[in-house]
Amino acid sequence: MNILETYQNYYFVGIGGIGMSALARYFNASGKKVLGYDKTNTKLTEQLMKEGIDIVFEDHIDSRITGLQKEDTLVIYTPAIKTLGILDYFNNNQFEVLKRAKVLGLITENTDCIAIAGTHGKTTTSTLVSHLCKEANLPFSCFLGGISENFRSNFLYNGTKYSVVEADEYDRSFLNLSPDWAVVTSTDADHLDIYGDKSHIEEGFKQFAALVPDDKQLFVRKGLEIGRDHKTYAVNETADYYSDNLRMDHDKIYFDFHTPSETVKDFVWEIPGIHNVENATAALAILHNLGVDFETLKKAIANFKGIKRRYTKHIYPNGKIYIDDYAHHPTEINAVVSSIKTFYPDKKLLVVFQPHLFSRTRDFADGFAESLSKADELILLDIYPARELQENFEGITSGWLLEKVDLDKKERSDLSGAFEKIKEKDFDILLTVGAGNIDTLYDPVCEWISSSVQSKM
Image 1 (cartoon, helix red, strand yellow):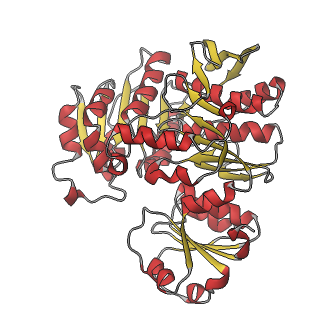
Image 2 (cartoon, rainbow, N blue to C red; image 1 turned 135 degrees about the vertical axis):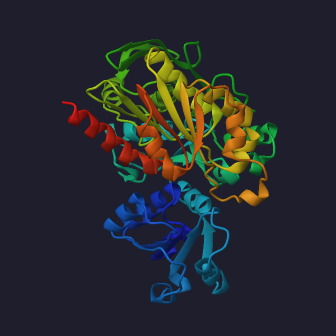
Image 3 (cartoon, rainbow, N blue to C red; image 1 turned 30 degrees about the vertical axis):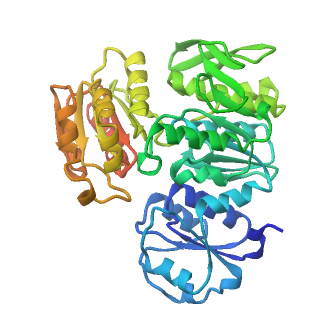
């Protein structure tokens, strides 16, 4: 029997995280009692509470905790939380305490798991795979690293035969999974605080790929060395599965999809960027191999709305465009900026970027500088530290990074002053980008541009 079936209560330490909240929703949908702690009340935690999950925001041992019995309570925590009185209480009282990755791994043991891994592209690809499963009415549950615009959630329950999971390489979490099907989108250097160097992160992905039992159920972007036989996918070059003939018409992208035995013409969707067609190619390859017909897949691709903070785009009547994106690695920023420059070559681009982690800023400073130099104007925010402390990274600041950016119009700002600076700028396209709390600018910016348009009509 699965260990998870022995518990009735599930306490989440750090429940507001995107991965943790998906698990919390899973157990809540399964009829279990779910409660937890988080440091900050956000839109996501507010939504969880509306769904019936009990959340506290103070590190305090109250009756809701002391009333739990270790025999029927599982405690789930995220490694992002280092010290916490609540976590100490559970450990000191011999409760079963497991990492999020371990619990997700236990869930995948009892399903046909479709795991999407990669340093870039895994959120879009896993969300798209989930959307295609939903449109094909497959019995599945999904655990996503972003909020699907179609589901309005990072979790969906539509059965238990399949599980679709975003396989997180941080802390080697994806090695806890039991994938029956898998995609590897990229193996670029990242999380060097964990892996040390590029060779070790590549080795981590090889270990993940080795978990897939069948070569024909492992799909790897062409050109990546994964250490075993697999199926390849690509865009604009021949592979086992590939897409080509990309063209744009009225903000829609058309492409043709090729399998080893046939070509299906004129897929169409509204998600911009060659890299996103690449993600779609991997998702289509998986669903085709699961037996879903191309008529269903075409309709599903056409009504895919994307993921919050993954190239979320607003076009206003005055011609201004606002794009918000989660990109926090030079490769990701390059992909977003290149897409903007490709489709809007004559428009003036203002980028507002919040670096994420001192270690990532240090390790990829030159790459960040190069990608940010492609903007027409830059507002660089202070580094979002997440789990790190400035005192351990002396000299690694936004000011230090800004000096490396080859741009005439550039300045540094803290988050609190960024909105006022944005309102002073002359731009055609505004891009806010980063993985920290820069998302707090989203609503004010949307309201400001909308009201500016209305006042001039």
